[in-house]
Amino acid sequence: MSANPHLSRRALLGMSAAVPLALTLGSGTAHAADSAYAMVYFTETNNRGSGTDYNLHLAVSTDGLEWTPLNQNNAVASPTEGALGLRDPFVLRKQDGTFVVLATDLKGTNWSYNSQYIHVWDSADLRTFTGYRRMKLHDMETHSWAPESFWDAGRGQYAVIYSSVNSSGHNVIMVNYTSDFVTASAPQVFFDPGYEVIDGDMALGVNGYNYLFFKKVDKLVAARSTSLDPGSFTEFSSNEGASHNGNTEAPTIVKSLTSNTWYLWGDNYRPNGVFYAWQSTDLASATWTPLDQKTYTQPVNSKHCGITTITTTEYNNLIAKWGTPTWNRLKSYNYPARYVRHASFVGRIDEYPITPYTDSQWTLVPGLADSSGVSFRSVNYPTRYLRHINYGLQLDVNDGTSQFAADATFYREAGLAESSWASFRSYNFPTRYIRHSNFMLRIDPISTTAGRQDATFRVGY
Image (cartoon, rainbow, N blue to C red; front, side, top):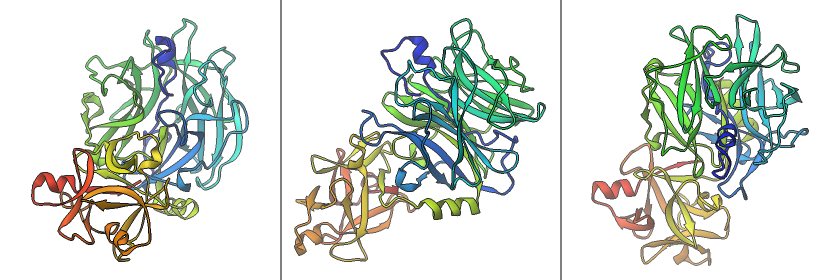
């Protein structure tokens, strides 16, 4: 959930959501054949305008850091009961190998809407979502936010944890148990340290401990236990936690499939919906190092996601079913919080989130002057292309002339600062490359380290 600075502290803490990315949720470890990741999420823009969609979205990744939205970043399923919208979706691979998706029953930011239910879907392969229903968790006059689940082998049931308010009137992590995600046991308090906590996210069976990550004020911290019993978790006395500018919520913990590295994600709610990430090789240390934003990219407008590991076959089948985006975003190498966009038809790089977000989406088409090159067509102004005039880049209508075609054509090459990224050389000024200068886009000769960094971009989504 996204925080609203005008709400009370209790409401502020109560409305954020877990972003469940833990690979160890469910059976305790990733499946031996898993080699990729699938993410479920909803979308919400900074002004809650175009690009906001309170339905189920889907993305995939081969490394859990760089994400490809599926179905053109459009929804793949929609709730048909309750608030007719969702927040905070979570996906779990069940013991039988199929999936279940859970989500908060809430549309938009109507924080006074208190649902005793959560949304539930079944899925055999994440290509279809069936059996939609709501599952009742309690009879209290309060919320059931940010649900996620794990397999409790000792009980032989799935635990469903979520943020709610206890009898003392502050937010705690509650738990219900279920075998079928249709009916659930009576609610119990899972974690209540005596102060406001929200956004529970689990990592199970790590060197003899189970870890519960949560939001404490505006910091992401953890508790741990050698069991999964309600009331057994204790916050570390040495826990330093993680935060970005004091606006961090929605802790998410995910383990690399290829190394012993753990990633802790947090959602900054000022501005709305910016993810930050930290890394560690030892959960017990409670020490987290910020990740360079060059290493990860969230799906555009994504909010409070859930991740599961998948196999290569499942990854390929999801791409085949839903398709990859027909557009791209270009991330700056040396200012990785910034993306190429147009503003008042002038090319520049600005920080994400960008309003309107479509200003930063581009269709890369064969070069207008040479099909072996590339031209950048605007998604929201599809008759306009990035072209240079007096070496500055602007967005103009294609007038069909050879001059326009030449000005709007570039050759994609290995990134001048990083070969796995990209640089773009001008067609008609072949010693000049697209680069940013004071955040404005232009074409210049490149001869310095700073220039090579300015002229390097990641072409992604």
